[in-house]
Amino acid sequence: MKIETIDGIIDVDPLIEEFYESGLVQLANVWSRAVIASLKKGVNYAAECAEIVRQKAAEQDKPFSCEELWQSAAEILGI
Image (tube, rainbow, N blue to C red):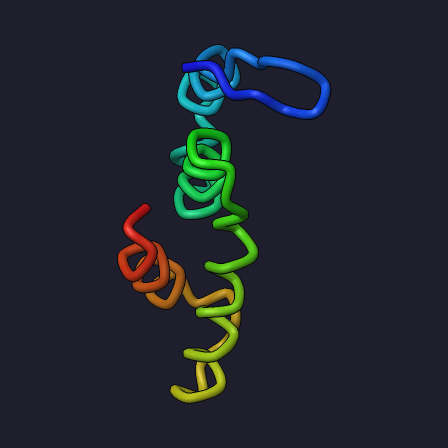
């Protein structure tokens, strides 16, 4: 997959491949999925995901680091 930026066209497939090969997807699953989706679609999913988690954490009196909240936010965003 190639995307066009101000600087030109970038092939994001090798970047995405690195997330999987490095093990980062296993270590930081939701964050990695957000970055990969951002690379593919040009939307800042990491920021959107973090905002959903912030809201849910406040509503549910849970810490921002709660993995359950991050997984829920990723599901809401479809990433």
